[in-house]
Image 1 (cartoon, rainbow, N blue to C red):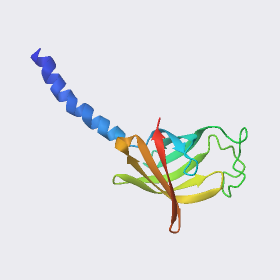
Image 2: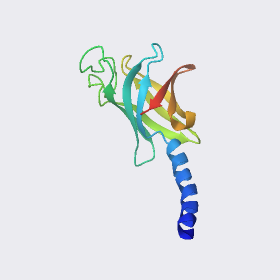
Image 3: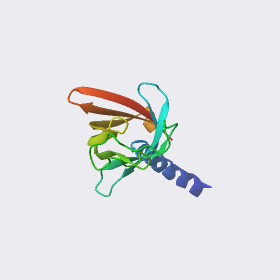
Length: 144
C-alpha cells in the first residue's frame, strides 16, 4: 500500500507538468470563428515542424458559400488552389508565452498578414491576430 501511495505522489506532479505543457502548445485542431459574424467558419489544424516553427492548414470548411472553393484572390503559390487543405499559417515561432514572426492568409481576401497567436483560457482558446502596418484584426479560435 505504501508503494502505491509513494508512486502516486511521484506521478501526480509529473502529470500536472505534462498537462500544463500541453496547454501551452497550439498544436491541434481549432475551430475558427468569423470576427464579423461570430459564426464558426473552419477547422484549422496546427502542427509543429521539425525546425520548431508552427504551421496551420484548413482541414474543413464549415458551411462554405460554394462547394470546393479555391483561393482565386491569392497572389502567391496558393493561387487557384483548394482552400480545404491549404496552409494558412506559416513560419510561426514561439516567443515566450506567445507565438509570432509568422504569417496568416485570409483566403476569402487573398491577403497575407503578419501574425501573432496567444493561448488564453488555459490553452482552450487561441487569440490570433493579423496585421498590415498598424491595422490589426483578431479572432478567437476554440480548441477542438
